[in-house]
Structures are given as C-alpha cells and as structure tokens.
Image 1 (spheres, rainbow, N blue to C red):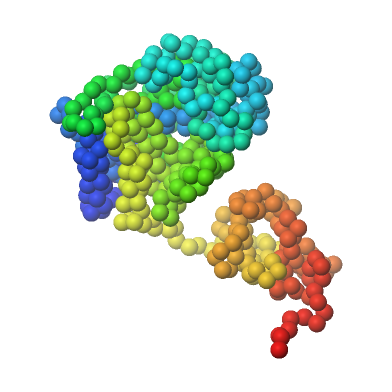
Image 2: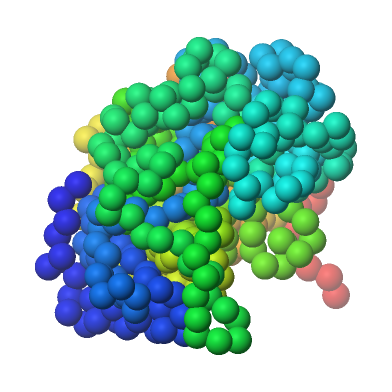
Length: 461
C-alpha cells in the first residue's frame, strides 16, 4: 500500500496531528502512533514520543492485544467458506472434550458461548503461557458462566478455543496458519507473535505521578489467538483496507460483511451506548456514524482499529502504556476529522446500460395499507424498498433469477418479494412475506386481504 501523504489538505493534517498530540500529552503515553486510511490507501501517519528520544514510525511494532481476535475470526471464516465447518456446528463436532462443546462456532465468534471472561488464576496477561499448556488449563474445571447463546459475555478463552479449532482442522500451529493464510497474502510483514525490532517497550504510568514501570512482555502460549500479536500502523492500515473491501485470496467481501453484522444480543447498557458485536468485530455508534473494528490492550499497550465504511475512512491508534489514552475515542476522532473536513466525493452518476422491462415496471410508489413506499432500481442490480416518510422498514433486495427478490437487511432480511400478476400479465400487487403492496392505498382493483369496502374512501360529517 502506497502512502500518499499529500492527498489530505494541510488543515486536515494539522487537525490530525493536534488530536494525537493532545492524546499523548493528556494520556501521558511514552509514545503514540496513528495512521489514517482513505479509499484503501494510507494518507496520513503521525507519531508523538516523550521517552527515549526516538520517534516511532509506521514500521515500529506495538502489541495490539484483542485486535488479534479479528485475525483469528478471519481464519475461522475461511474454514466456513471452504465448507470445512458450519458456523452453526457445535464445538463438540470438531473439538470434542472441552466442556464447552454445546456452544456453536458462531457463539464463540460472537462471545455468546457462555464462557468465562478470563482463564483461571494467575492473571494470564502477566504470567507465562507455559503455566497453561493445555486447553483445559485455559478453560478450567467450570468453563461456563452463562447459558450458551443467551447473552453477550466477552470471553478471551473463547478465542483460545477458536485458535485450537483452527490448529485441529488445519493440522498446523495457529501462528503458522495465520502467516500462510492471512499475513503473507496481505503483505503484513511486520505483524508477528513475538516482537521484532524496531518495537516499543511496554510501560505502566503511575496514576498519581509522572513516573514509569516496565511491564512484562509474556508469551501467552495457548492464549495467543486471543491477544498475542504485535503489529504496526503500516500493517494495520493494510488490514483495515482489507476489512473494508475484502481480498479473494483471503476472504470475500460478502464474508466480511457477515463479520460486520451484529451477532450477539446486546446488554441493556450496550443498547444505550450504541455498542454491538459481530463475528470478531466490534460495532460502535459515534454521533451518527457507525464504526466497525476492534480495540485491544495488554499490560503496557493499548490499541484500536476503526473503520467508517460509509465515509471510506479508517484509523489506527497504538500507544505503549497500560492505561491513560482512550484509543477508541481517539480513533473515532481521527475518522471524524477526515470525514468532516474532506467528505467523500461520490462517483459520477451514470445511467444503467440496460434494464429489464419487467423490473422497471415495478419501480415507483407502492402502498402497504396506507403506508407509502418507493421501489427503486439501483446501479448494482438490486432493488430498494423504502418508506417515503424516511421512517420505517426498509431493505435492499437481490434478484433470485426467477422473478422474485430476497431481502438483504433489516426487518425484511431473508424475506421474499414476489410480484403477483393478473391473467393479462399486469402486476396486481407485490407480496412481501405475506404483506400486500398495492399501487394505491387499499387499491379496490387489487387482491387486498380482507377486501376493500365497496363504498370506498369517505369523509365524516
């Protein structure tokens, strides 16, 4: 990926630099690095450092903690796409004897498997992975905290189990599979399970004094698929571009869209804060913007990767301190600065090359009872059905090749839209999951369930 620093305006670059300077100073981070991606290309990189005299760059490794989970999820989705497993498979089918076998693969990916948040003591992030050589040592004697599939409960052991699943089905170590199937194809040469120079040292900053304490950099062993990786802003910028667009050598855009779709029932607090979890990816609402990505932390390091798909902007933020820098908020701010200062320029409008007359016939206003909707043909070969008021159920629909259409999102996801025709071939109404849409509100000439009063519309004295 070529960095094109001159693509951002000087004012935008200054605003980005100011934001990370404030974050590093107020968060009292020994160092902080960040990058912004737009249109799949790195367009800005910034760094601030107050320790050691060396300013890190886009090749300096930091520990990225739970962003590792997204990499592990990509490996699992590859197995699904190859037909090796199904997301609905119980773990027991592929990895028996864990004590958590009732949980499905999708449950583990979305943190709804009911597993504990952490492994049994001692604290796994600050102790050698050799203390937990077997999967049973990670899960413990009583691995479940909740009924399987009932609630979102973030689980590091859950992703350890997914890493073990990858190893079992691939017949190779998780790290080797990751290198072969994801890192090498995407050119992520500076992402690894152990640090390679140049890399930042992890520090704890005293909460009440400006002094430092070095944090241990333990090899997490079995827990590696949950948080082991070290990476750089350069590599994570490439990874962000992949998460936004897909790469058929690694994972399709369709499978990545599935990962970006909420998959876990949110807690009440998550509803109010606008947080959801997909399959290895977090979804957050920031103002009116939907952000997708993942955050990460291990003693000595905090990290965030943030994508705003509608704006086609992504941000990476890495710092080498145990706490202090709100990297998720900083990443959201970097995205906002670019999106607002230099809004995405849409592609020029172009007419369709061709159109099926039987599809064009469906375009225009439709009524579900008295609710007004508009059906529009889109340039990507889909049709969209949206309430004319701007409020209510809406969806895009893909063609099935037989004159019917299947909903892609929202209330109508998976539901079939079917034009119902009269004997002369004209369209009587649209059937959408048994709902009848007519050209006029309660059209007397259409087959409206329950019929239409023969006296028609009237006023009242």
